[in-house]
Image 1 (cartoon, rainbow, N blue to C red):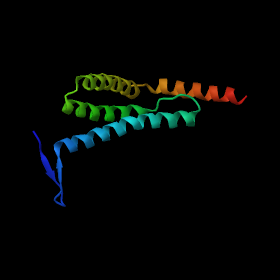
Image 2 (tube, rainbow, N blue to C red):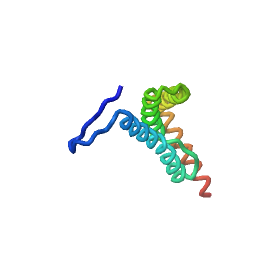
Image 3 (cartoon, helix red, strand yellow):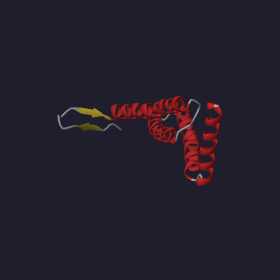
Length: 118
């Protein structure tokens, strides 16, 4: 089934072209997660996993899963669906982290930085 979309200038965009654009957007979001993680780690001078990493993973993975379903690629579908479970689970942990756990992590980071400065 092919749907043709016309924009205000009267040009047409077919369904495969639209899905190709969706796939590229998903891949761009998925790739941005590495950039976010790299910049956060450089800033912290150690390996860190910012929350934005998981949001980019979730949005990019969801978009890529939709594209994989359109392409009917079982390998791609299984890989993206499995990843979505991991991203959701990690976001669950972040959202349900108690303030005490968060404060302990911040305190341990301060102690570590103070010992590095000595």
